[in-house]
Image 1 (spheres, rainbow, N blue to C red):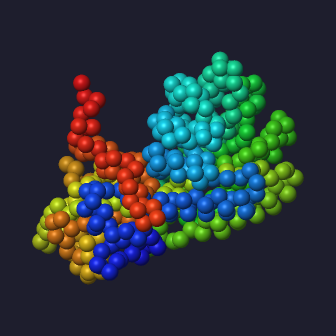
Image 2 (cartoon, rainbow, N blue to C red):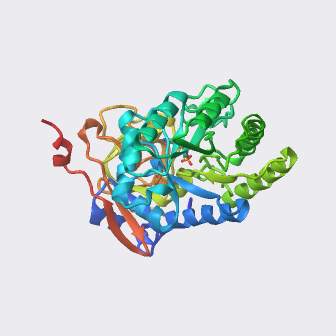
Image 3 (cartoon, rainbow, N blue to C red):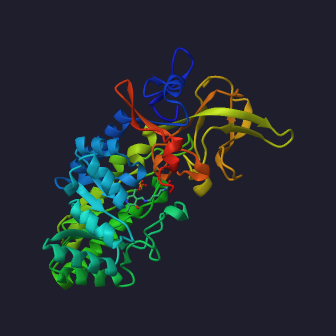
Length: 433
Ligand code: LLP
């Protein structure tokens, strides 16, 4: 199986986190997001332990909560002693409602509004990750008005292209995020940040991209090199050395059997050893290191269940299996051409004899969950499972075609419970006047 939390039970049904998925579908209805809470916690611990073992005290992971944001996720992160990355007032509000200790939060975003800045300060967000000079001045002015000293990091771009898909590559010089070292704008914002008394500059941040595999080469090592060199230059020119360097998120996960496995502790060890050697060569101290994984914390903890509506065979062309969800609960194939592993939950061991496209119910031909797969020929009412949907599925869901968003059910220690209720038809019209 793709992941060791997926199996088959004695009834011949697909299991996830040890539970019968067809029984979960019957109990909670479909479409249904399942989240393996034990896996989420294990992934958090993997990062925390690897980072403190390799980078030492003061280095830790932040969960990039854009990957999956709802109250219970922040409760898990609080309990696991994780810090978090937030990108909107909506995510901040959700974390606050979950009683997350907000001093452990980092507020990102390239277009924070005046409302965002002031709401984040009201909520006690610990750190702002500043994207540009205009925002720096705005955050400084608001902090000054409140008589506080706001901790900040500066988002800088090292000019690295990680060769993942364009839409999620963010570390290039011409990125919409951050300021480039190459153009001199990074130095300019460091100089200005150091002049502003209401801001405490802690360090630098970069995020090179997402779904990065070892075969993408040495992107993290290159980013670290560029940042250490830049840090040494800034120290020489302005006497400022960063206490922390945030290397962003991005480690890839396995959506299909063809995807490679990323050894996260091994990669972290390599980055740490490399950075130590570079710091020694540059004669600078080793900063604390932060990383911001999203996908690799939650992706393999997720599975989506659907009920088959129709099987349409177009003789001589192709076959369609239509389900009761689609691009509204998982837009990732439509947006990025993302690959997924699709299984029959009803009969996972039967021969996959029907070549087909798994398509959604939206009025749009591009509403495809996954093309060119093979399934045991399903009947109306059979349950289909799409694996590895824990990241950027629920969080990117929409109400296109006025389709309500599914519920999120957590699986923990062999029990299941609802973390996010299914939207009702009433919910859909709640704000219509
Ligand atoms: N930090 C920053 C500043 C980011 O922009 C991101 C992701 C992360 C951390 C987490 O990266 P991860 O570890 O999850 O790769 N919607 C796309 C992914 C967009 C990623 C955006 N930024 C998808 O569905 O693949």
